[in-house]
Length: 117
Image (cartoon, rainbow, N blue to C red; front, side, top):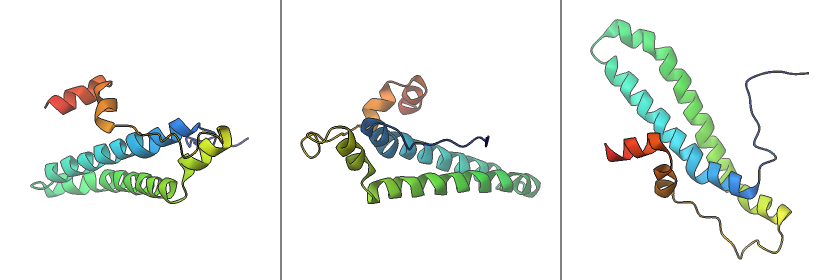
């Protein structure tokens, strides 16, 4: 048995894939990019701190690259449509899953606080 910290999205429903593609992953990309900006600005005037933060910045940048690649791949290969087609062939094309990031963010208390600032 292999154990680790990884996860899979292979068996998700189409609405879950759509949420990850259109809301969750882009939100995390924005969040991680903001973290990178904050870390870079905090080390701007202090060379020692900048050196200490470089590995963390690099780690976050790799995570951003992974999520961006996942979003591109999900869209390129039409995973949402394929997933919907497997589960409900009659609904493909007639129902389009559309999630508004702003409305979804309103349901999360952390996001609401961020939106009001």
